[in-house]
Image (tube, rainbow, N blue to C red; front, side, top):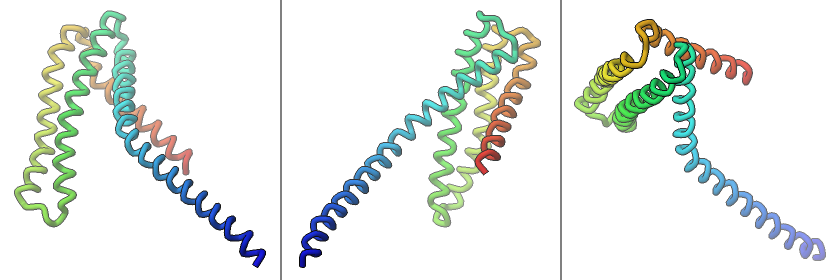
Length: 166
């Protein structure tokens, strides 16, 4: 009987502690879920800035060129990303339907993927004209090379970090 009197308050305390911990973890997970979108947007913004500055450095831009270039490049990246987001959203919608997606929906999503490439090329062409007014012909020529170098650098960094985790 005495043991029951000791265990009952202890069991109640343990249940209360477990309930509080579970509630705290649930709230923390919800907060992380809501902050994830914000952190993703921040990450994209930081990465976009880093990329523009990396390319400006690779092209050996003057301070005057760099400021103009980074502003225009950031606009181009944002516009291109917006078009890509819209296409991915359509693809996601069709993917979520799975076998229930109609042939027309599948075809439209496939077309959107092809159109994405065309739209991004049009965006690049639009900004190319602006870059021409800032960059020398040699810098303009080396722009795509610098973009590829940036991509390789990020991929190498990602590979190394994955290798270190394993």
